[in-house]
Length: 576
Image 1 (spheres, rainbow, N blue to C red):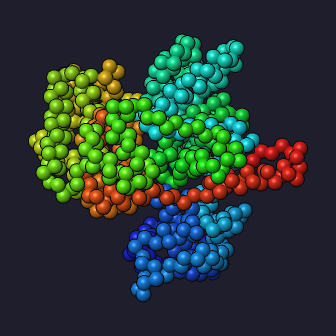
Image 2 (image 1 turned 180 degrees about the horizontal axis):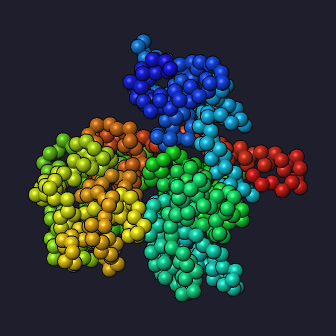
Image 3 (image 1 turned 90 degrees about the horizontal axis):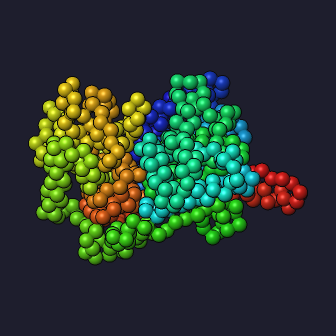
């Protein structure tokens, strides 16, 4: 049985009930072979490691253990024990030899330096580092840039140049395109084709570049959870591509990046494209962010430094200088400049403090007017205009629940529209697919609008797509959908709106970070409105996401080790 003192740590939000339950199972299994009794700190360490996936970490970093203390006031008389010295924690964990191993042994938990990993997380991180560092990063390219900086145009230009320079079609590389979500993959295919046309590619080159449409990473790897080996493509059965390009790579978790990289052929190129300043994966890891760290001059001698290109000019912001300045100040963590931009009175940036009820009510009126306009065009069957108007304005919330959350804002708008719970569908209702539906070619994150049905068999249909390129689906075939007069900032990644209304909570929240606000602001094309108190905004801009991983140090160590080998044997062919 776990020590009852663990409940004190749970009370302060350091660990959860599920962490204690999982740790108890592991300890009981280990005790079948030996009667080891972990100390209280070891129990806490196990629970922290089990919680890492939920919190986006790949490990527990004891060098920064103060950041894991939750609501514990370290040193207070009535506070649970929380040592700040890594050695105290590590000694407690190392004493439980049946569960904790050195990095080469197989146990549920592994200590690597001053970090504690779940064994699988460490193995995946080691393999990611090994693939990226293979042959001094020769097969890796990284393209970084914020929204509107021309990343897709740059990729198109490079591909057109690459394909056009090859003498025969037989030598053209087979290209795989992927993105984390179905929505991002669909957009990648369309935008890449358009950019190829814009840069003057021939019909044969465009056909080669778009021979296979972009797919989700899961689909690229042919994932099927019902199989013993869920991924068809893996280290023992490599992907049949010479080059794989991954868009929105910041959204890839450590585990998914592992599955992708280890499935690549040894001589295949991989190009990772994304914005490291946006929100990272919902799951554990910040692989693109870790890679982006090698831009720094302190890594000049590391081979990955030369493989990173960054685009910084925001082309689409020429008509919205305030949005551009706001995004740049948030990304830099400059609170004073962020407030200065918001208070400068620019037409494309608006800040409403939550206590300003008159301004908030005026904004609600504007949002409802947009919803009524959407209803009106949907009612009259103007489908292209319906889709265009839906993208004109979007409420983005940090939280799903609560007064400032998605649920409350959706209810507020529908109440003003006269919509009741007895009306599951109504004309002009904006909806989002919440789970991939392959039979309809609709993906998690796809947004549509309910319109009057053109068939006598159903009263309502949903339209999805873009103006001039839409599909109609009977609502009877829709399964997993949500109403999205408001949606979470996380769900908005990869989307753009003429006017983005960003709703932050009225009180400090640990999920409201610099990356969250930056992601929300950069969804806007012509105008952004932020609704929140000053102290919440200041705290968010000051607070970057810090996820514990060891990937940077691991890739640095691999390079240093390879250089030592070369010094000892200059003729050695090193494959890190």
